[in-house]
Image 1 (cartoon, rainbow, N blue to C red):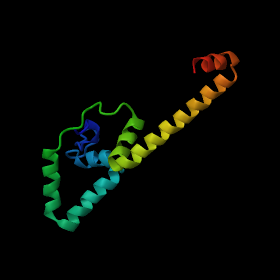
Image 2: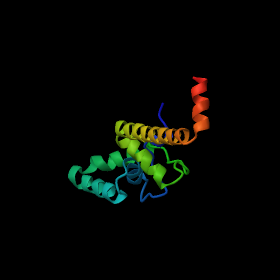
Image 3: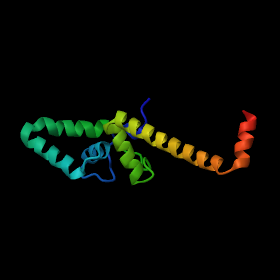
Length: 125
């Protein structure tokens, strides 16, 4: 199952010719200037095949949906997922562990400062 947020699209909104370079930039999180620079450099290095590959990609790739991300932070998150899914999963687990630790501290504080609640909990055990 491939999420729409982890798929490579042509980005027609930021496009110069067909939107392939801007789509690659959106997918990888690299500045579009550097992707375009690499594309132009590849034309001089390889000659014709890179131009053909660009147009093939332009015809094969789907257009990017207009409301794929809610905001810039969501876009950055999904770029991180595409770049390194394992690292993103570790970061999410660490965030949940931190939330769990803070919630336990709040529960401990509330229970220890409320003798009536502590007595009720002990009675239920």
